[in-house]
Length: 285
Image (cartoon, rainbow, N blue to C red; front, top):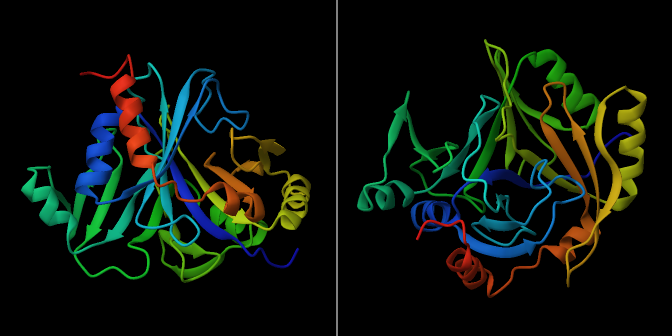
């Protein structure tokens, strides 16, 4: 396998309060609700983490999933919070409006060096660059790693991602330079994924999944879930392969064909989310 025609899809966050997160992602960050799905039991691919209970998935972003990198918010009914580790760095967004909206709503704006930082209700950081966005405002996702050389070898030689830029303590990767990129930054302390750990997802043609699985297996890489099919009631079935990099970061490769059908924007997604927030017996009223 000489190349992987991959497409960056989304990053998964576990959230503890859908109402507070709805306000943050929709009102402060200005994202739209693209689709909302409710499930009665845990996901076979542990999309909602190691929980076998009722849960929901809400996709939010700045445009359709077929052309934009988005955020997947997974909510486990009855779980109000998750211990946050140091594995996730942050997401960089280009926007001329976010900081203005944050100020209007008195939402805390912090500074980290020359960066403006907004923190979600669950502690996830968003770096806001006050500039006009391109076709997709979400520029990059940053994950922390312990051994940059090992991570570079894994992501480039095994997963076939391209290096866009590199420095002594970080590398920027993508399958396509026009997509949202993945930044891996070296930590100086031990990495802790705690309970809030997320997952990054890519789409690849179905024909690529088995060769990718074979190469990772041959190299002795961690396979969390071999090729399995996932059903969503009333929607397309997808095939997924779940891997873990040398630091345990979860990586999902889903078939492009099934996912393109599954990820159609739902016109009533926002209304569905609001309805289930109102009905939630665990939601603070």
